[in-house]
Image (tube, rainbow, N blue to C red; front, side, top):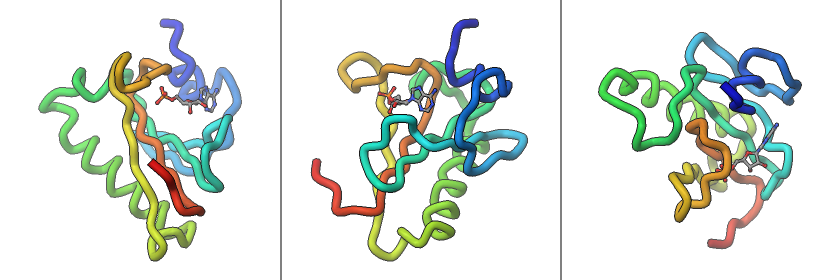
Length: 110
Ligand code: AMP
């Protein structure tokens, strides 16, 4: 499968990894939109949020809590941050492997 995030997960292409466990991987976005811009991805290939199912429930909860934990570790929890998942064409999704953007370290516009 020609999925760039699957290749990062399999360590076939490099990434600046911030966190990893058996279910998820987090790495810095290569074109950051904020001082902190980290992508959290499930190791299982899921195309987007609407392609997730009941079996992914605990992994997705774990992923969200890992984002919060990382925000605390990086010290951006007090000032605040944003979590975004782009879904499909209108949502601006470019990489078709479910991912959540953690953005922070500055006042974010909309
Ligand atoms: P989107 O699909 O629009 O939610 O965003 C995909 C994000 O993945 C963009 O912010 C890209 O900069 C980022 N990205 C694409 N390829 C890589 C890569 N090889 N390493 C790190 N970030 C990447």
